[in-house]
Length: 163
Length: 276
Image 1 (cartoon, chains in turn cyan, blue):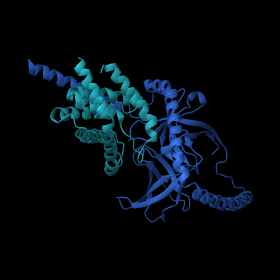
Image 2 (cartoon, each protein chain N blue to C red; image 1 turned 180 degrees about the vertical axis):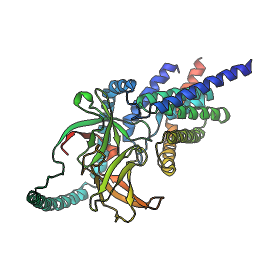
Image 3 (tube, rainbow over the protein chains, first blue to last red; image 1 turned 90 degrees about the horizontal axis):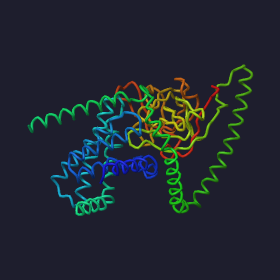
Image 4 (tube, rainbow over the protein chains, first blue to last red; image 1 turned 45 degrees about the vertical axis):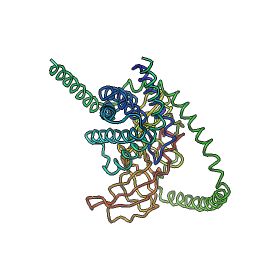
């Protein structure tokens, strides 16, 4: 997928996330579509691409939010990179494997978010951070994977065959 | 040669990381609030976000309608009883109010209960995309007379305060955001404390620094104290749902359920001027 198309996809995901997804929250938690895209890209394209696309997606989120610019860029870069490493070592054609990878990589990225917030003196207790944000968001992302995975994988494989 | 290329790549990565960390520290809200790019983004996207938010709200209403009809009969009966009870309570409160005004006149005491707010209605057009913070974007901005630190409420209670204003939109920090702090007191006992957010968008807040000898009960109402010069006095905030001792042992803290449903906000009121 061309880079500009991916940026557009990130933009659409971001607008959906700040509007529509507010209506499908579970206990106030909504899925992180940008993080999900970063992880899917990393898993399928490798660590370097994953890190770069995660960073690009994160920068868009940061510019949109207008504060703490760089926080999402770093955390999503970490998630994308880790997903890339997992993609090189694990079987790619299994949705369950990717759900597990999504959960782990989301957890890692959100943990980085928490550490960065801590360094910026935003006080969130570790229990609240884990049980009310990090684990629920990671679970929500992992549950959404089967809905995206088949389409993304099919589209990527079709493209590579065409090339 | 390969080692040199790797070293160069690592160096560039380190520079990027340091620059990103520096940007993060320089863009802490309320340290620098003039990110014009953010304002342009927000103003440009506002109509799209408004349309999508409206559409999502309609879909949610449509989908929840059949579910709401299931227990409509029992609920209607309960609401009728509740209306009757509240009507009698209103009569009683009106009586108390008149009595209070008579006594205040006798003592020549200036009423401090806010009566006159200039309110501006606004619609929520977007929310913070992440789960850490609780902010919403409204479709009112500087051209409508909105300024930073104005209080935002619903008829149910306090929502938060305006933290940034562009020409067509503004951003509101909800009381459930971990960066928020509201001077407050327990209505019944007049014991003061600070209401702060717990984490992002979970819809709960916490009142801290309550002296441990203060009588606390679940269900007590918490209102703004008016101290701190941002929020006007006597705006309902929420109801105590859980009480716990703070680690220092000197204070208690209490979890609050805000009166305003902050996860389902659609329309809010901005207090443009208050006479308190």
